[in-house]
Length: 275
Image (tube, rainbow, N blue to C red; front, side, top):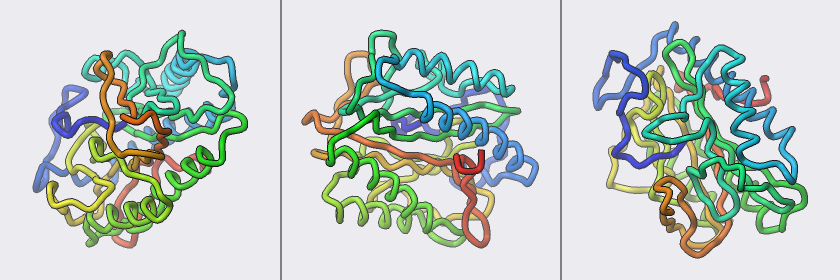
């Protein structure tokens, strides 16, 4: 789940966290194992949604399914009630870049680019992930946008290793996106994740000097989540105060994984291929 940077490090559950430099948590082996479980719940729900979604369903249908499955697996939805957000998923369609509110009035149609983002809170720790789904037959532009968005996520993840810097991730993502003719939404970033849904550091998807270029350490857990637009990179937020749409009505796509930093590389905790 993306969110404005001023919400970073605000707790979603009452807890006392051990803070490291810059407020970044280094998880213990016990905490990492719990995060594996919360992330597996998220991966399972998203995999199931990707298989069941079809034209004629509403985003409220998907939200109800996600909440039911998260609770069946012993967790609670991370998003529901988070700063007042009403759903268990963010469901954003076509020009909606992020934070779309599930609704019984929002019908999924053939050709849609559907983004489903969800999180699970399990035994004190969150998992967080997002997928973009091509609903039926989509345009060539939409198919390419979805493909490049997922590729960009993995370009960033492939840089992850203790000792590298956030700018290394950001540069790899930015270069791949721009090489394919798309733009990167800059208003929203990835983030640390763990005891809180949003923690330090901000995990940006483009080169910038406006945020700390943090050196990665083993035990950090990051939500890496590039958002790509087919047109302008700029978005505006609708009157519901959540849904961000592209300013030029262009398509948008997003992918996200919760990733553990290790001494030798990374572990994708929300890997759907393992559930």
